[in-house]
Length: 106
Length: 347
Ligand SMILES: Cc1cc2nc3c(=O)[nH]c(=O)nc-3n(C[C@H](O)[C@H](O)[C@H](O)COP(=O)(O)OP(=O)(O)OC[C@H]3O[C@@H](n4cnc5c(N)ncnc54)[C@H](O)[C@@H]3O)c2cc1C
Ligand code: FES
Image (cartoon, rainbow over all chains, first blue to last red; front, side, top):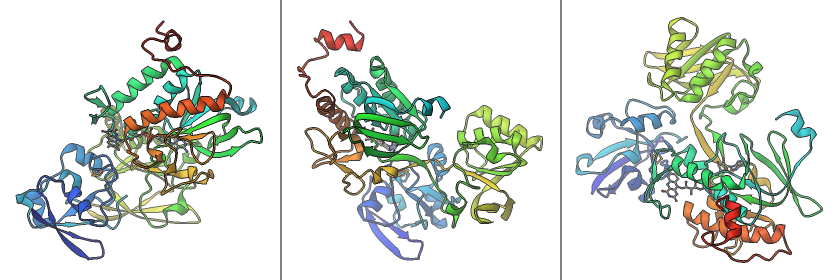
């Protein structure tokens, strides 16, 4: 299990216990975190699972791979710390991770 | 649309399939075995639905007897399989209206004013029609169709204009290259200095930038400014800070998403944007209108391609009874029936 905190656009925050082996998107959906639409079910084909990684964590989580970076072109207000949550795997390394959910997936 | 198409009146046929995704395509096969020729209409400019548009290169592992096939590979194979039945494709057109005629048939109309009169309709509309994604900028709706465009229908809309194109794929690059010669000024904006489009288009675009014929901005839109639908400026955010670009034409290219669209107004029963059907005929609340694939719902429904294929086979039997009420169909295998093999062109 790894603790992941999601901070919504309005500042509301929620910490979930994420099962190792899932993706962060799957863990968020399982715990009904709002604002993660994930229309394509994790195939890196929709960009509606967009999150901003807290600057303190970007080194640990890493940069998007090429396919993910291409898909991020379809998201809105993309920043240096943008990731698609279906492309981040839950592991011990990210225990304590803090993510921000954009105002709207699009 | 050409003038002759409207002049010749509606296309009269036995069956129109709305949506050319994998289920619509396989329906051509099952209907074809029963001598029913189909017209297919899809808003996309090529067949294949989600498989072709959303994941052409990704592997699918659960198509019976194909251990692995890519999205596009499946579409190509289906196109090959249905070739003998010579379906007619009407691509780049959205079905907007549907009504029942007094003689029991249906009339369909597309957004290009093409009309069809048909005995049977098969709705294979998946998650709805593919629609360009609208950037979540306040007030953008007011500019759409006047200053903000997601496709080019008339080049004259862009002539002598200050055009801003946003995106990094082939659509953004192609329209940059096509519109640059007729624009007053053209700016391409993308969030990063890397483009997904074809390398030779990227190369051409960079040459135009180097020669001063157009501008490239690495940044993102934050707001629109203008009055009465007439765009004047676009506010953007770049690494260097906030900027304002002068633009009276904007083309955002952020990919496509599926929207139920006009289907909601066709008078069919809907359950949470899906069309309930029975599991014998896959018929909707309106006799003669069938629904197969992702768009339908029934107890136990799975949104899988293989389920849609099964639905197509049963639907075709029922459609046959509507189109040829007096005909007796004998159950046959393609392996051994010489009449089926003749239809398939293998005998
Ligand atoms: C990333 C991803 C991976 C997937 N992986 C699998 C898998 O491994 N196995 C599997 O079985 N399934 C998979 N699926 C699901 C599968 O793609 C769908 O079940 C399948 O595409 C449904 O086919 P369809 O023909 O019903 O509809 P679609 O493929 O959605 O096609 C419907 C078509 O109808 C058109 N249309 C709709 N309304 C109109 C209108 N009014 N006028 C004109 N055209 C219209 C649309 O533009 C669209 O092209 C996956 C889906 C995604 C997104
Ligand atoms: S769920 Fe679609 S890209 Fe992540």
